[in-house]
Amino acid sequence: MNAQQLSIRLMKVAAHVQADAVVADIGSDHAYLPCHLLHNGGAVRAVAGEIVKGPYESAKKQVQAEGLEDKITVRLAPGLEAIEPSDGITAVTIAGMGGSLIASILEEGKDRLKGVERLILQPNVHAQAIRLWAVENGWQTVAEEILKEKDKIYEILVLEPSEEKVELDAKQLLFGPELLKQQNDVFKEKWQREAAQWKAIAERLENTTQTEDIRTKKEQLLEKIALMEEVFADENS
Image (cartoon, rainbow, N blue to C red; front, top):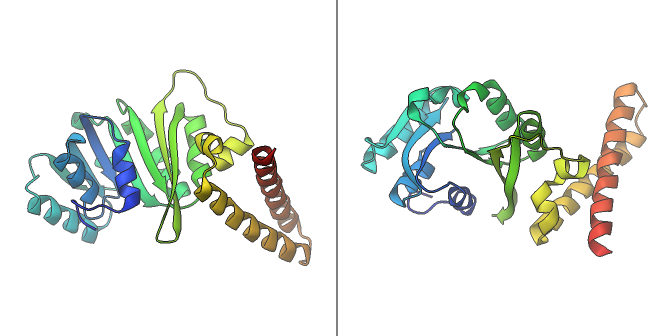
């Protein structure tokens, strides 16, 4: 992978960046995504944020190699601390992390999201944590995608600020409000895999000493299994 040839998942992320955006790519690694956006007209300026020294140095070298030092600023900083008010950021991309970590990055740096028009987020797991954060902080889901690449399944969530409070029910939080409407083959594969794991865990818990924690965990799993069965029953009806 390089700035000219992104992975499928990063190409999908790039496609959701609005025209003429000023992008902050958090956890940018080699800065391939912002370099790609600048080369292909998907952004006019960008910030590449990295918390780890090694990837930060790699990002700086990549930006220099692409001749984009005047358009991409590389910063060594945790999360959204890579964003300065003077940057005028209009889009934030965060890809390749767990959903809980992405949600914590957004929560800890939400004061730096002023003026941001769109969040494009690609969690590897636990997208539900991002949806819950969005509901609690005035962001609405405007698009979602689910895709498979090299036997791994990824979700992409696109959020925009909402003046009205957006509510999501339990199914929408778990499965995604837009993905529920689509229910493509990858969606079905993901949740059939998940359900098999949930059922196996619930069965093991059934044969374990029933402490309060065990009972709570088992109830949560059974609730998720019931939601999934309801979703697929609706789809087949």
